[in-house]
Image 1 (cartoon, chains in turn brown, purple):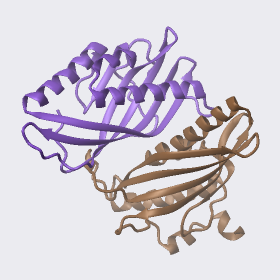
Image 2 (cartoon, rainbow over the protein chains, first blue to last red; image 1 turned 60 degrees about the vertical axis):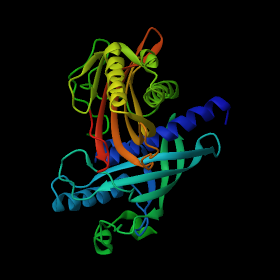
Image 3 (cartoon, each protein chain N blue to C red; image 1 turned 120 degrees about the vertical axis):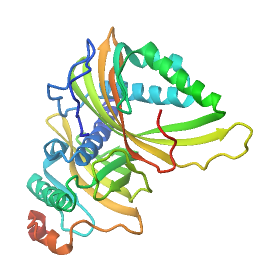
Length: 172
Length: 177
């Protein structure tokens, strides 16, 4: 990859992560999915891989619906992207490792600012980026929980995850 | 507040309102870096209290909204606001040492001369009181969301609308002014 292409790749990949994280915090699925290739794989701890936009949409709609049932404002979250390292893997592919601190207020009452406590998670993201028709997209996204607050709990139970009927659950 | 959110009000001349949907990827690296650089420069100005830098960050006609207060409309008014805040703290014998950490940022081009961004900023603050050796422990005080709009004017990018919204605040934080 030429130096100028590499700079564009690095900036684009970082922007993709920014678009994804700000959209997930805004619960804006349509915008968020613009960061992902249509056949993107998304691997989260404790659940089968998501293998399409439909899978990703099903997961987040279920998650946010459950959060909203517990409190009308759902959860207030912010994913703070810190370290980002991207490496070219050919002209149209790249890999990335990045870190994010996750702040969350469960059962948010709608009043800002919410009390600030310690981050709930420190997540490591491992991404494969692909360039298609001059657009960089996330082709594979995997999240590892590196540090967790002692009171962290997944929002969806195993039964609820199974109930999602993800495409990836039958093929993995 | 959501990604790409903007009310469309308080839009200075030369600064696009939020009514038109922003362009989605492909991205424009030059533009993204220029806009991110402006935010870095602004945050550094806050931490060094060098208000002369603000002129190279904000457009002459600007809408600057902080803590839900009425907008400041000129770069001079922004500089004056921060100078007065600094003077107030000095009068009460306090020095506030801050670090504003820019973390997640999403810049979206709207056309060749306009862009908008959503960014998260983690604010660390130590307060040193005059005559006291005690410095409050280092800790995150605030998590802010910045929503900015940028305009390219005479070949220079500037922030033409800035809104800062505190999303999380430490219970030990100083009261906002």
